[in-house]
Length: 91
Length: 455
Image 1: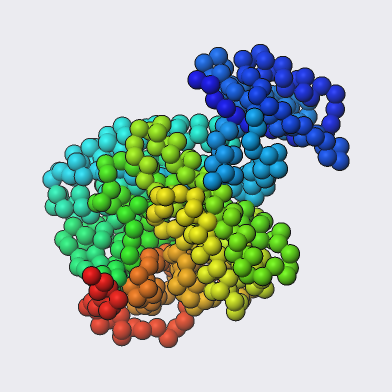
Image 2: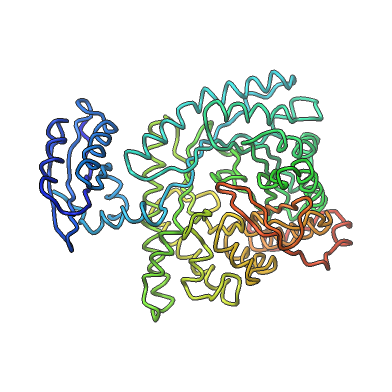
């Protein structure tokens, strides 16, 4: 099952954030469909639209790995199914 | 392509992480009619088996959905067929074993509460109803998770005043039976006018006779989100702008509820019932309906202007919510429980909020006289008269009103009672001593109002 999800990363800017997150995604078979990234007053903010291959990596397992790597690089990483945003912000 | 803007993503994350957005409850309604049996032990066993087999997936499903969508589901609950309906099959006077069975089933599947130790007596009290009502004090004293509710009035039939006085006695007996826990049993007992069949919120949830065998009902939350939105408006924003901002926020909150309800129903393999648009406060800082009223512009909740602000809030939530789901149901009105809302508690402590003002607020929102601690020695006629006033508002205005009063044994006005968790902390409030004692002793039925004749 391929599940669209939104990945958001928030924290202090530093070297290697995109690399660390992308590595977890690649290793888990998660495809990146779109990326937006900005830095506001030194705060790194990135949102990604990804497709999770749940047959290869279950959703909760990917969440666990991302939280783990987020802690290592000092970022708050959240993975949520995409439809929650579509439901809340689109009629 | 990412068709959601980063700002919208951040807004949703802030709602969850800083403004207490959550789904207050996913409540699985279950019909237990098939469990009726003349032998109460056999009936109890059947009830446990039925609840456990039909609801065993509820907690894991809610946990998975909460994690995947990133929106916490605070409570997982069960609502069952009103027990008085089942109790008609057995001759026992003490129906406590049925409550114990529900408690055991709830414990086994790990749900927070089970509602439905209930009877509907608005037009008259049947034999099984009377036995169930008589068993409430012992049922609530001997169980942890069972909630009781009794409907004593409706717009179609008026107020059963004998039942109101009887419920006042039952509240008093429950207070006595749970005296060592500051009469906490009364926090699990609601007296209703115009009770609804699909309410997902406790303590008044039950699974009505018009419902399918199993159904998922969801109660949204979000006072913290609404308060943050209102607080962010400029001081000179007019009330139309305030209503508009609340409406837009209510839409988003309701959509989250709708999504969770659909997904929970799908994964549990049962029908989706309703989304209840009630704003339900918690004792957490900022998650307060009183603070929304204050953010709209009342100095302290309970002061003049409170009813206006609450009416505006309640109406705007419904308008936004109505766009968010086609399955509105349950109570769908702001809750104003005193002990569960830190802003309400502060307003009472500062002398701004009284029982009389809460009664006025009841007329423009849902379930007004809720989680109110009163002195332990309040006479039953006075308790009954407070309940009948709430019923009169509901009957005449064709709306649900509910009363959850706690006459805390050994406590007097100004003392603080702590229940913990979602039930919170409350000061003992004073009750007007000029009660309609003789009115209550007259008994009989308050006739249905003319407005009930709508055909």
